[in-house]
Length: 460
Image 1 (cartoon, rainbow, N blue to C red):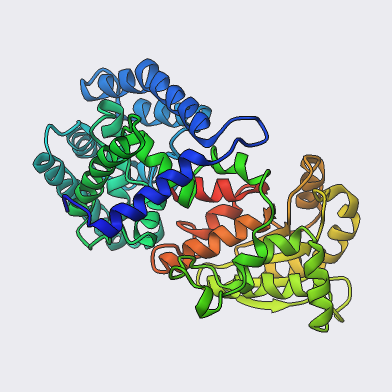
Image 2 (cartoon, rainbow, N blue to C red):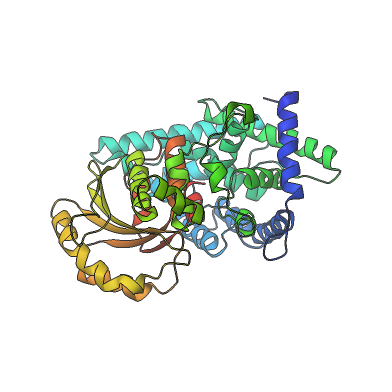
């Protein structure tokens, strides 16, 4: 795809103008200014650390194990690309871990990561590396392992393009999942099943839009700038731009959860999120209009919040049950991943201010003890999850105490917006995002806070 039609051009320009005209956030900087800072940090990191490291690896001066470890460390210290997620470092780890022939793996990686000199070579490298990944996966499963530990071919375009843009950032854009989804939502592009051709189409659209945006705005747009337009519209993996804007914006919950009447419908809806899930962040914040709406519905906001959390977990594919009312001192609900052998005990906390785990720690330990002991006999892991609007930072000691005194494996402080982000990702790609260790379970393997930004980082 080398061009876009007139309607797509107009839609793209609208989104560009939204990005350019967005007001400053609480720190006094606009999304454009924040993006410029991000890009400056990226370029500095590329030139000083990433590009030399990659060049040394490709030249044989750094062994694969050291290259993988050092790249991981750099990206953990500098969260500028979302490479820590499932299609980046996790994919890298899987490839190396499942490869029986270390020498072959090293050669395949070096051949694939070297920057292509043209699109034909890029296509060939994507296809060749994808074939290698498919063979690794088949061998892994054939040896009696589960498919969860095998690298996925769908990760190849992001993985390779991340390293290609390090070598030539003016030519090779990173194949972000959220950018692809935003293009699809805006009807600018529809991917096919050919990952090589899809990446080249993605690249060409970036080139077309860079030229279009430059001509329209009378300012220079590079590939990073086009990327930022889509991030602003569809979500930055690290929320570097939109998080700043969000704090200054009034709640959009009412418009987000109410389907417009046909006379008011200007464009077809783009959101994948059902209203019963989309409303969760507003409920968690105890917005007053929802308190009254709950009363008119014959319930309390707290009880409605529990029911909606249960609905979100059901949509994700868990076997769920509400436990809270009328059943003694127990958590609000339970969610079971039957095929993946783990259980979730959860509580919903409606709070205007950040929820402090320490205020309920004794009660929490009491009412999860019986449930967690029972579940631990039937499931490999049991996770305790609290869903709220946000959380205070005083949770480390309490979490350690809960883990020592109960049978739960981890304690997760899940922001309602993060739960919404997980549901959206699942509905967009239900077969790709599993409940298992290569999917949603990964969110529960480390105690502490889980934000929407962290979810997007993982899914890139």
